[in-house]
Image 1 (cartoon, each protein chain N blue to C red):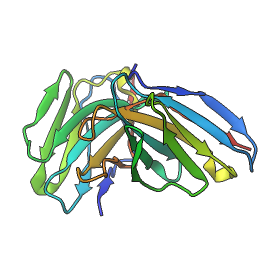
Image 2: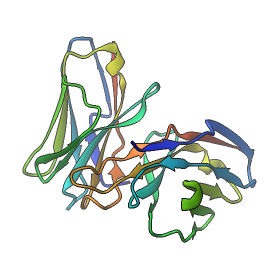
Image 3: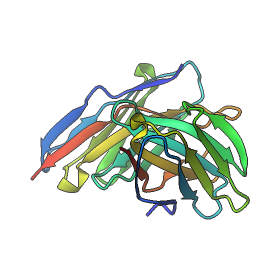
Image 4: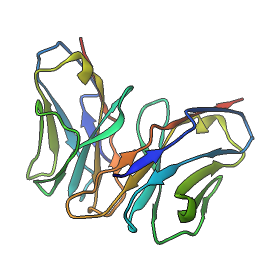
Length: 112
Length: 116
């Protein structure tokens, strides 16, 4: 158990819908990262927050957004969902920017 | 641009055999970090090791060992006396420290199947 929690574990929704994925980092970790794992693209970095502020952006679509709250939990919002958004979404946390990232169990999103 | 290549898509070995998973990386920076993660069938990503670019010492942890060679830009992972529980997808990843850029760049992964 990495100490990073993600909810829900599974999510099934329809095209055009909006969903919110939630992540709680390990106790004391200030950095939260979101990654997407799909069959065709592999594991790709989406976005990083550090202590509530956006720190880095990767291949994140404009339909996707995230935030980190004062209690350090983070949410990833996915809107206008398309079939291609079906993937495993991971959240990771680290104590600082130069520390290893510990991953949550992931949220499997299926868009029908 | 940084890139990680894991040329072996799938490997099958018989239990108790040794197996080496290859990882080749590309980066123009002299300071960087390399990682290995394990993704068992249950789906979570498990951190195995972190190595910075200034530390070329090989590391051994039980049945696991890592060989880092800057001259060939490789960071290979060997499992000795493999066990069925080692069956998983293994990812090599690269990260470059820098202002605001701490994301991991992953290889495509190598699926290891250990047959009893």
